[in-house]
Length: 388
Image 1 (tube, one colour):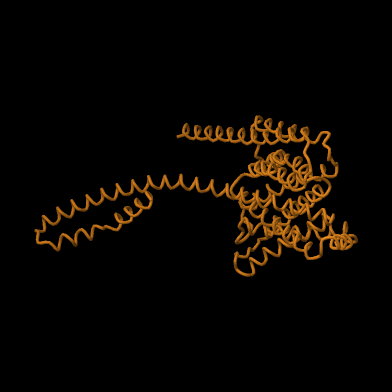
Image 2 (cartoon, rainbow, N blue to C red):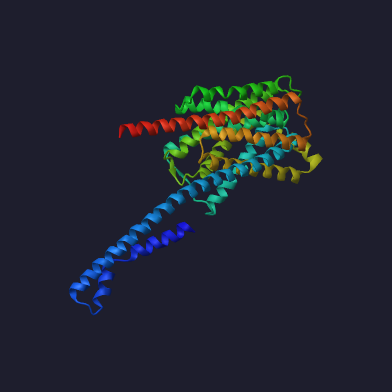
């Protein structure tokens, strides 16, 4: 309200012109000399009022900038909260789907199709402006689609081969791979202390997996592969968001295009790997739970997968890829708790301790990174002052 009042004062002050002051004084019965003096005094007084109003406006604008910063943080928090909720629901529905139909390549590909059709519906109905890619944009989308497709299918294999909690214990290593990929591809190297803070993450996850009751090499290797692929996806997506790759390339539209690319890439994979067995697996599952129930589960899981990733892209457009990876790891705490409650897969004390150490390491990494970024910013500012 303070900003609004100051802004109104500023506008009203600007609307007062010297010509109005002159017309007002001419209408009086004073002499020409008195008229000029009064006009000058009146004009000077109004200029002082204008200067005062502008000062108030600038103060309010500074406060407005702080308010914008707060609003931006709240917006990012809302993105992360929505992303967490949608991802938890997706993981539960997806695991039930894989338990009923153990065909991760085909289920994953069909989930891509559901999301791709949803994004197309938004474009064709005008609810969202359709994107137009440049040649550079098409190459970028194909590259991101490749990483997204293989990363998701690797996650599906891991989830199908072991408990949800085990997959997400391994996937807690994602910040490590994201930091490595950011350094190698973007050239963004951080202080050695920041990389050292990732040691508890690696050690905690390693300890959690050691002698794990439900340990599976297939689930472990697939989850590790998805870590690498999703780190590459995040870095390349962030690059596409900052570069000019076409028209109407918002973060949401970018993910819609990536989903189409991922679906087209996944089709040959599921035909080769599960094309001859999928219909038999589906019919067996349909005899137990009904065909319509399976179709509903498939559509719902596909929508949850698309929406949770679209919100993740909205979060990524506002933060660094490594920050997203940290948030992704924190999200896994909620997923592991939800999976234990729904599927009754117990977590051993060792796995719980290792997970706690790993996730605490992620928090340590985040704080360390934030601290050294602040130090570097202060050093740059100090150098700028010395040059002046």
